Image 1 (cartoon, rainbow, N blue to C red):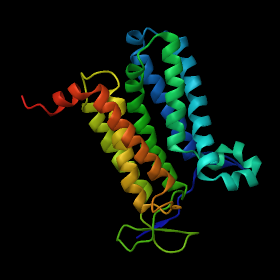
Image 2: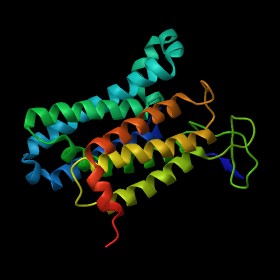
Image 3: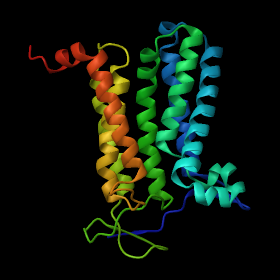
Image 4: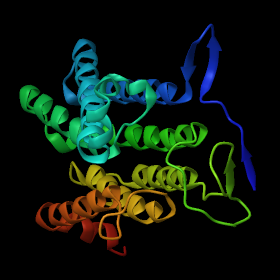
Length: 254
């Protein structure tokens, strides 16, 4: 059993502090900048355009993640406490909403700059999955998204929560790190293949791990699981329609 006594703050001075969760967002977008600069010549972008896109991406991710959290996950709470909607530092950022926000911004930017969506989406996927993995570790530090009750040897006892829990946040971080290494392996496929592999496998991982996460259920599944089911179906349709030959190459034995 692990006795959880971790602080959500990296440091605090006179009531002001920097949270680990905030650091994850900063690192995530710095990784995006690094990957975009690395590929800016092939994308035919200059540095100013890279920074412009990252600014749009930050807005899209934050607004999408927050909107999904407010409108889908906890509408009754937020509409009863309107001021909390803008307090993003209190937590409450939905992965699915952030993904939709990022996709919309990327699509619009690609359309404006005449870049193939799949090309840019593939580049963003690797830093994105790393940021998601570290984000779940930050959730663990914050005592958020706690797991279901269990008596396994590695269960976690939070100071303000009864009974020992599955470290579901660590499970989620673990499969995302594995997903990162798998995606690095994917090369020389049609643009978008890496991105849709991410959406497909992330959704399956989320669906499975959420059985170990304490959450509200609707028809025996959480909102996150239902959202993941939708993304799995969408990914399969995309694979069948656009990537049949890529999957044949992937499974071909030379």
